[in-house]
Structures are given as C-alpha cells and as structure tokens.
Length: 430
Ligand code: 4AD
Ligand code: MG
Image 1 (tube, rainbow, N blue to C red):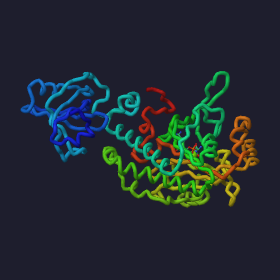
Image 2 (image 1 turned 90 degrees about the horizontal axis):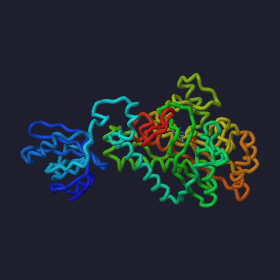
Image 3 (image 1 turned 135 degrees about the horizontal axis):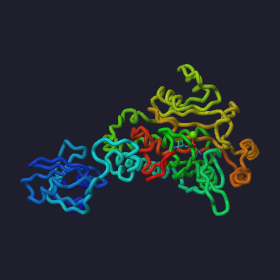
Image 4 (image 1 turned 30 degrees about the vertical axis):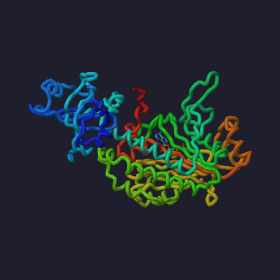
C-alpha cells in the first residue's frame, strides 16, 4: 500500500510504501535510524540488521542526506516520536542520490540559509512555519465565506497610489507609467458598492527602505471592505476574524506549534473583544511609562507599540490617530477633527501592527479636498470619486499583513522566515 507519513497513522501494524527524502541518520553495527520526510511530515524509519537482508542494511548505512527513495516497512506505534509512530523498515529503493547537500544538521548563519532558501524550505521548522501560513490562509477563506463576504481580486498593476506616493514600485505599462499595488483597498471599495461585503488576498509591494524584522518589500495582504458599515462595526469584524484565525491555528497546527516550541498559552487567551485605546490615551500612557521622546502628532515606533501591547498581553486596537499621519481617505473623527476613524491592531509579544483599517470618507467634496491637500492627481482617482457620486454610503475596511501574522502565531523572530521566498531590501534571490 502506497501512503504518506501523515496518513500512515491509519496503517498501524501494516506494511506500507512511502516516497520520502532522508534528512538525517544514525547507525550502529546492528541498527540504523533514518529520519525521513515526505512533505506531509517527518518520521523515523528503523532498520534492524537482523530483520533485513545484508544489501538493505548496507544501503541504509550508506544513504546520504536528501537522497530520495521509496521506503517499505511496517508502521508501529512509538510514543517517543511527535507523530506517535515510526516505520520498521523492510526494504529501500533509491530514486536519486544527493551528494554534499549544503544544509547539514550543524548550525548555519542566516545569510547562508537565506541564500539557500530553496533548500532551507525542506527543514523541519521552515516546513512548520509554511504549514501555519497555509492554515491562516485556509481559516481566512473559511471566515469570510462563512460570514457572507465575496472574494474580489484587485489588480496588481495600477495607476494610482492608496497609501502615499513615497513607497511605490514604478514600472512601465507600455508607454504609460504604472505602479505595483500597495493595497487593493480602493478597488475593494468599488467592489463593496457592487457586492456589499468583499475581501481579497494578494501580493502587495512597498518600496520601503526599512530593514527591520517586520518589513518585507513584497508581502501578502488580506483586505476586507463592507458597505453600510461604520468604524466600530469594522473593529468587531476584525477581532472576530483574528480570533477565528488564532483558534484555527491552535486547533489544526498542534504538531507544527510543538516543532516551533511556540508557547501557546498567550495565544489561547485571544478572545473577543480586544482592548481598545485611543491614540491620545496611548500617548499619555507612553509618557507615564517614561517615553519622553513621544509627542502628540507623531507616529509610534516599534518600542512604543511593544510597550502598549505588553500592557494588555492581547491584541490591542489603537484608534483615532492624528489625521496628518494617516492616508487621505480616512473619515474624520466627529469628536475631534484632528483625528480620524481608524485603528491599527497591535499583536502581543512585540510582533507589531498586523492590521491597519478605517472608515472611509464618503462625502464627495471632502474627499476631493483631501486629494487636493495630499497633492494627488485627481484624474487617477476619478473612478474612486465616482463611488461618492453615485449612491455613496458609509463604509469601512481593513488590511491584515499575512507575514506578520504568521510570525506572531509561529513565534518566529523575523518575517523573512514567514514568506516562502521573501523579498527584502537586499534580497531578490532565490
Ligand atoms: O497599514 P497598511 O499600510 O494599510 C493598508 O494598506 C490599507 N489600505 C488596508 C485597508 O484598509 N484595506 O497595511 C496593512 C497591513 C499592516 O498592518 C501590516 O500588517 C502589513 O499590512 N504591512 C506589512 N507587512 C510586511 N512588510 C511591510 N513592508 C508591510 N507594510 C504593511
Ligand atoms: Mg499601517
């Protein structure tokens, strides 16, 4: 019977064949322990000299790291392994030998590993991080489908900039100038006027010269937009969505979280509602905490966000930022016109901002004024203004950065390990 490492649990005490790669091995005169992986998981194969023919035992001792093979044997229960079972090997058929695999079980530096990202993806921890990424994506589609959102795919090649013009990737679009998408938001707003509740999931590009553990040049964003929705209702959707994602990862990625040695206690505490603090109160709080460098009107940096997040130990919404540090499209706060109806969601444990969201300006004249103040070209926003010309309604939305969310839930330090092939300030290869 041909099966996989993951499905082998259904074949206890039965003989199966699995296509796999050898990741590591240990052998003595009488027994060889083969560490195998097949994409679905990692499993030990035990080759006992007395139980196999001489050629098979010799082969087991000689196989090199990352050689591909078909391995046949009986699945037996083993409480010491993560999986709960291993294979008592009967025979081995080599598919392709690998020699001098660059990533050996010893420690390598990060740059070396990043240079070999195409191979590094095979290692146990990197494999676990990608599985968690996949679960977040799966749970995202589940959440939005279950709550009546329609997936709409905004374009990647665009003529306008939603999030400010300084971080745009330029490209030629035949004889026109084009930009790689910074956010699908403006298009999602149009789609929300057609479908009511919409979401998207796609790559996003920011030519930011930031070299931090939270910044990628290319990252994937989940965005949602809802018509007839004020800012507070949007916050409720956000906290329900994030809670659903956290619960799904805790439930469906136990093995992976274990491999990553993630302390799950803090994740288990994540439930709605999330604490909310206004920007004004956050500034006061930071001053009380001894941050003398922060002045009203300035954006928060990593240490500020971390101090606020640590205070709550839960994801926390910082609401109503000053108008002048946020994009042009945000609805003014009726209680204080110097601020806008927006929120950033800050993840616990120092993982930083994972969501940016807001209520959008729905008044045509105000939006025109803002486009003017921001010195944007009104012509490239003409379609966006049409949404306010033809049946404008209050609407709100948000965007969640996938890689930062993966980093938080997996507990990995740096977002470079949360994308399969991260694009960083100094890295376009592999
Ligand atoms: O806060 P941002 O810039 O918001 C928007 O783009 C809105 N248009 C979204 C919307 O309302 N539809 O980005 C949203 C999220 C951030 O909170 C962060 O998680 C992530 O995207 N993000 C990045 N992730 C990795 N690397 C970068 N350079 C990122 N920039 C933003
Ligand atoms: Mg933001």
